[in-house]
Length: 248
Image 1 (spheres, rainbow, N blue to C red):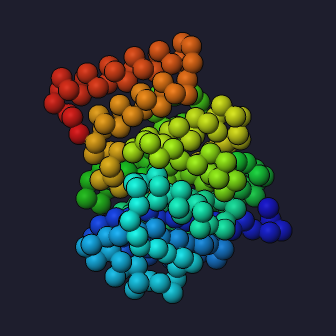
Image 2 (image 1 turned 120 degrees about the vertical axis):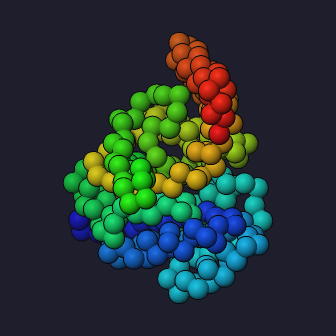
């Protein structure tokens, strides 16, 4: 890919997140890598989010503010607007690990050549000014996400071939990556932090509901021993969360 750098599309899906959105926008538009298309899909926010988007409109490729049918409908809409070779979804509140992150991602692409999905590690806040790196595990068939979605760069053709299943509210990305895994798509791990992950997202704060959706995805996608093993693990985690009172 050295001769022609891939165009990266970054998509931020947002609704009523005026407090967090600006730092995400600044992180994306502040990247040193020049070939970036930035798209924001706002779900008709009423808290001033659209005003923040308008403030940065000159730095955006496209944006829209209109009602949608949920996160994955908005993500599919973003994909339909995109023109990049690879797409990264950067949620409102998340930021890239540093201003050279995309430059390092593309250098990793140059070294490994034409994978379908590149994914990196994440940084999670452990204190007010402390970050801990979480290393992404190798893709394998699991009962949960293989890696943090915000750290992934996916070929646009895959996102159009397997659009996010909008009947799921929190686990359509798990289904998407299972489809990629079962169809033997090539995953490559970039062993450095890609994103500082915001733990206030819907899947993190509504854990039991998310686990129940994972069970539904497993019922649909998996077979044989894997299916029952994964479901057993998830039912056990739900039981433990209820027992300990950690329902969120």
